[in-house]
Image (cartoon, rainbow, N blue to C red; front, side):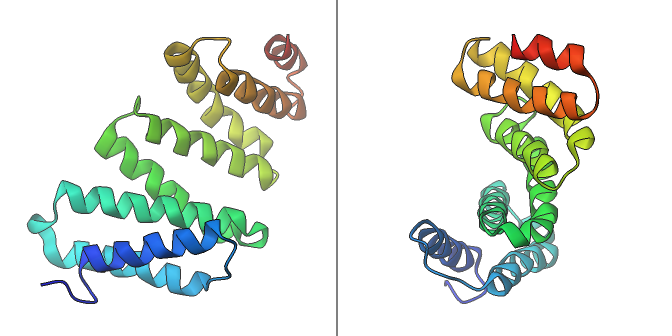
Length: 168
């Protein structure tokens, strides 16, 4: 029986919110906060009956929350806890080499840069750059794009030689 507090119902609402976001239909960020909080509360109540599929659904909702809050420039601070939680959950569920984990780590580094913390982004982005280069190759567009972002952060930190090496 699916009710208003079932994982499936809440996730379906989240997917509808994602469609609204993509279509540029305004939504209440407060409602989305409540959805993720409801999932967290259900997880706490369920204990051992919480499944891996439920965890993956929660990760999906956190990723949608990250997307939502970072699309709204003035809401980036509110999005950071979702990003950190999604990153930690992806690391635990999927492992450090999974594309979702790598994308979330890259997003976290970029979010730090957007918020003005170039120096804090460097230790997040350097390992991600290494993982991407290993998986995709040095000439892949995703690696080259991250090189540019990382080079900018390094230059901002005064590490000009390292910045130039990435830009070459």
